[in-house]
Image (cartoon, rainbow, N blue to C red; front, top):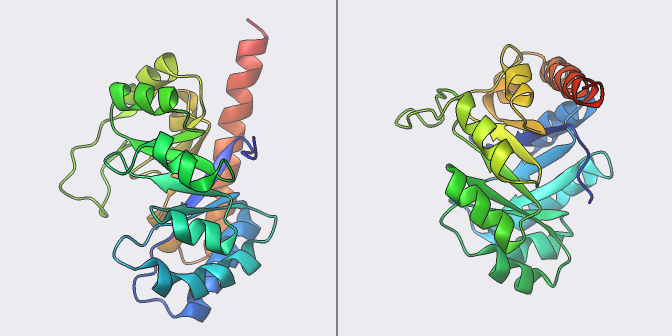
Length: 218
């Protein structure tokens, strides 16, 4: 697999950023330790996004995986590493046929049943949430850390927690079985985005390695 564990995934939110500021943000995030960048701009067409995603690809290079949300055609056109499917999006099986096995396929899930179904269909990884309260989804009741433990017991493919994750709770997420975390505001809203990414990656890596050492020594 192309996946490098532990994973620190930065999910983009173009918001009102200029293209220059967006590229600077992603460069800082990757330099700080982000090893997966997910382009999640649900309201934009693939045609509109293509020039920006190509520019992002030049910034990311081989330092991080580039994952495109929803748009299979965009992911193929820009040479992305993978596609991220929402829980209600097209099936993993259909996406695999469209990509001709060229891309990693991730699925966003919110329950054990959805996680098991995504694994059965052949997903390469999962993003599980929403774990904690988050301003990006104020109406969503967080699932909490217990969902991560349940998913860890139910599937074998790697998964990442998402939703309200920051440097203070990232280690808890990994400690419950996640292979990493996905964040938006923890990097986007930071004054020093490179340092924010570095601190997050440090917490995630420390917890990930600690869990593996514990399992090896049992």
